[in-house]
Amino acid sequence: MASIPYHDRDGYIWMDGEFVPWREANIHVLTHGLHYASCVFEGERAYGGQIFESRRHSERLHRSAEILDFTVPGTVEQLEDAKKETLAKSGLDSAYVRAFAWRGSEMMGVSAQNNKIHLAIAVWHWGDYFKDKMKGIALTHSQWRRPDPKTAPCDAKAAGLYMICTLSKHAAERDGYADALMLDWRGHVAEATGANIFFLRDGALHTPTPDCFLNGITRQTAIKLAEARGIEVVERTILPEELPTFSECFITGTAAEITPVRSIGDVQYTPDAVTEALVTDYSDLVNGKVKNPVAG
Image 1 (cartoon, helix red, strand yellow):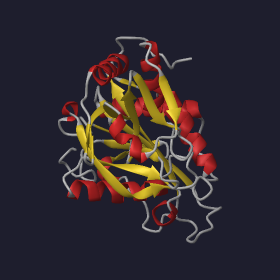
Image 2 (cartoon, helix red, strand yellow):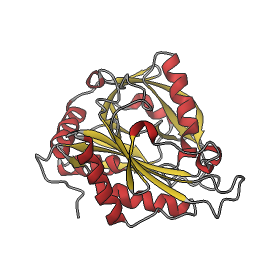
Image 3 (tube, one colour):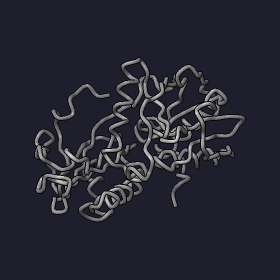
Image 4 (cartoon, helix red, strand yellow):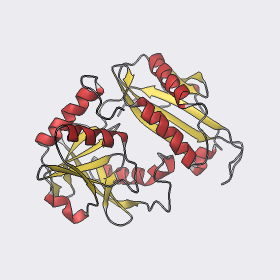
């Protein structure tokens, strides 16, 4: 993580159609998105001046907002242009890109039909999400579970859904782990706090069915990369008692990219040929060395 406080930086943030000096990109303390979590966001990475899967992220931001009953200002195309402009203004070639939309402060209460919808884009340098990630990270088990889709809008990349992720990651880091494995409300293996998860057994990859958590864009890319190598990918229910039966494990996400896992609690894994190949394939893809297998 960067050591410079995020609120105290040089540069500009695109906010409601104009560039605002970074330190002046503020909102009112009674903003609905702060009090009632009516905020959606996207985390994206740029490599070599190009935002990977930018349009798919823009489309998902719009879908997430619709699920939360509001509309992102402007079209997908306008958002695409604004992200490119913000990246260019940052002067960064490789960077993290955060686009987000939220309800403002015109109404305070659960109801917020008349609140203005704001849109902002910030770009900054961000290296590896995990320290020494190629050695494999250690996960613990979270006490929190991904909710039943009937109790929360699980198909939206919405701020409120990450509260239990923050709690889980804080607890994991206090105990010396990099992250935590979360189960779903049924007790099935779900994901890490901000990334999807894959396991290898007998040459096939197994990954939980994303029926109560996001089917991540990096997750979808990893599946296509594996299939391009002739690796079978099985999406299914995975039970916690199966964890010792797998030989390799990795997580996927825009921030995490493809990160090997060396352990989950007391269960040990060895990052080996399949994980290493997919890490390389993903790096080649995002850096423009090979064609995107998901495109089209």
